[in-house]
Image 1: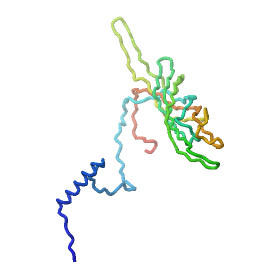
Image 2 (image 1 turned 180 degrees about the vertical axis):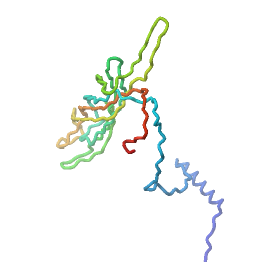
Image 3 (image 1 turned 120 degrees about the vertical axis):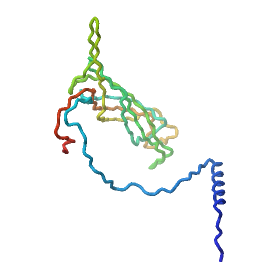
Image 4 (image 1 turned 90 degrees about the vertical axis):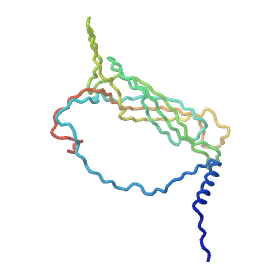
Length: 246
């Protein structure tokens, strides 16, 4: 009967260090990590805490809605793909407003932004009478847009900067400049595929026609709130109403 030979701890450490050195030579980093078990539980308990709020009346500086409007922006764009494609799989749109400026006295709103389009399309490697072989590709383009629109202040009129001048005194009243908040967006698109030239690798008998450009016609609807920070007097309240719950 044989006894199991015990390897000294010092020799084990030497062997581990030797393996680390060999791994580092080939560009592999060894991480000495501990085993972690556990995770989140399906239900976490909580306890409601009394809300400490001012009920005796207060003057607060909060955003006041000056106007809320839906702006329609019509966009027409030509997009050139980096390679011939035979089908558009999906187009994802993301809107980013880069400028929203309200001019003084003229009540005109200047809007600028970009429409980021992530285009997923299919390219063809080979094809037959009833089959096509290819890959799914993706490219991202930014389509700029801009417009001006007249504002009807259906909330409250903005406070402007007033200057009173006399021979000895000059008094200026500084108010926070109105700003915009994009509340909602909706887009309607129509895509037309443009085939400038047929690919040399394309089977002329194939039913799938390759194209290199897209013409997009879009109607963009932006719901915009125009806000201005103001001092507002909040009257006395004996109860705290949180969305009608209390």
